[in-house]
Image 1 (cartoon, rainbow, N blue to C red):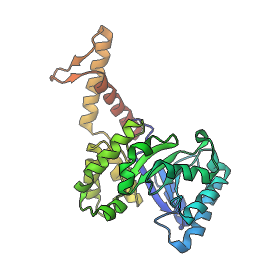
Image 2: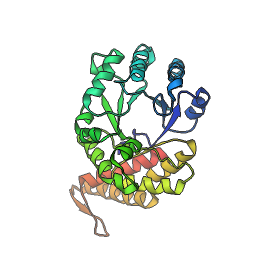
Image 3: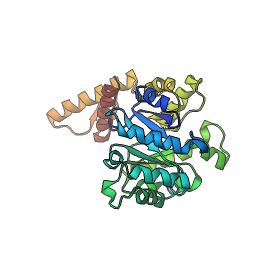
Image 4: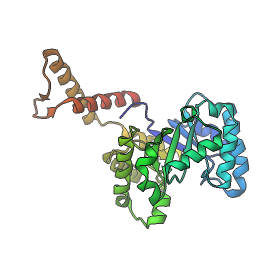
Length: 287
């Protein structure tokens, strides 16, 4: 897992401007400024104005993404037209989070509304897959040249597919993990955990996602951030084993050995060595 991939992201409704500074100082790696689900219809215009005001004084850290409304709807069209006129947004300093993506042409529509003709000048695009169609088209969406990340919108999926319980998402999560990896994208972050008081349940859910190859998670409240960070950080045992592998690799490189076996019988080769190095890099990042 590349260490540049954020571990925690925090949603904040743009309709609550007093919450924006708190979110920016929460310790989240990414702040997700929401113009969509967290904003009532009567507050959409004010929320958009608040998001644009934030861009006027955009901090260097943390990273910021703006979740617009769907680009084929009236609110999304207005969101994207307004963002496309803002110079900071066009500099690529802010990520675009598109909800309910069902196919790559949803991304094309968003870019046209932003006034972007050359995909190389597009902002980093993060796609939320929230329907059966989106999951089925995950491979094609991930390969769109403007897309830098995939994530699931599990609440909408649960409603469409009548899903119940954590295990119901196993295949769907695995599907987008593979789609992202095949397209050379980072591992997808997990969707929000909606029970804010169940931190033990959040930790167990994160462990399930981590085991499937997901990395990091979005949060609805700052109190969830430390649990998410801890869940995706390497354990002491993982760090110890990674150090053993890297040390053995260094010794093998010195004497010209290729594939190696550790004293406890574990066989190691290049992919295992690279994984161990990533584990140590991540441990250093999170320390």
